Image (cartoon, rainbow, N blue to C red; front, side):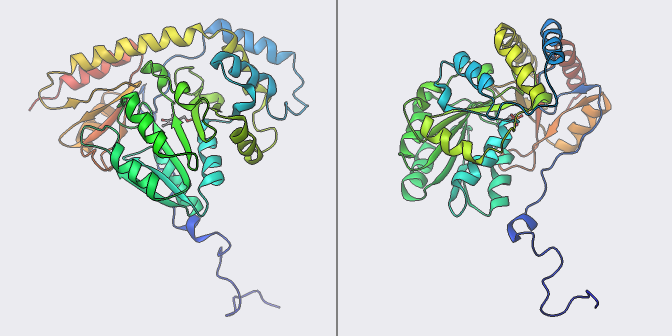
Length: 363
Ligand SMILES: *Cc1c(COP(=O)(O)O)cnc(C)c1O
């Protein structure tokens, strides 16, 4: 018997769903550069004494045993740190995994609603699932289009709403009244996500907007202010009822022993996070002030650990910075962001190098 295809045989890989086949892969190419300002990571690792403590603790653990099923110790430490009910805390390897699971929870055959431009992972997950993606353009000043979003929320759905505060990739922080208006328009039907990956850099805190509403969540991460992107850990703060549903989608033992242990050590000594966030904010304001009168480029205000740099030609600007050893992220293909590069705030000497490279640009 041959296995050559006959009219009755499915085409090669036709088992891959149509939605997956037509979704482009996450657009990221790793490039080596001495100054890495392209991923909004922390320029600093966990403080050395905490690293040593975590390694010591890891040495006493049994790596041959499965970790705690739902990382209960870690969840309780997060709950204590955030003043949240432990039953409403869900942890995953990075908040990107929570975005995927929430899309599964609320997006399949339903709507995923966000703004445009938005964080690419929301639209990627929605596209992979074949959900209906609805993106409402931001206002020209990058503020939330409260009326248009509210109209979508009242007229459509249910499904999943993503609001990012401060917003990515613009760095804009909205008035709390505007965020509240959008969340209120979501009623109790929509699953309403407040992605707060960068909240430490804006001193904003959406917990009060989420608390007491069964359908709302705050997503937080150890990847940015905590300086632990390599560990992969994110969490949701939500109601016990929604957490119980979300937890069904989390695969068993999904946060490994190493990650649980290091994060627990960090949570026992969290003061470094506040100190570093304050340093990043000071550096951000220094960099933005230095670029205020740049003759060619415009640095846009930001409440995050990155900012947008608007240039006449993103490709030329990107290559100039790379030639000076500085890697940034192009965002110029996104709606409203023509000519824009996204630049992370790094260590002071890295920011100095950035400013020196930008000072070479003249009209
Ligand atoms: C960086 C980032 C995250 C965090 O992703 P992790 O998977 O936790 O590393 C979440 N949301 C936004 C908007 C981000 O920029």
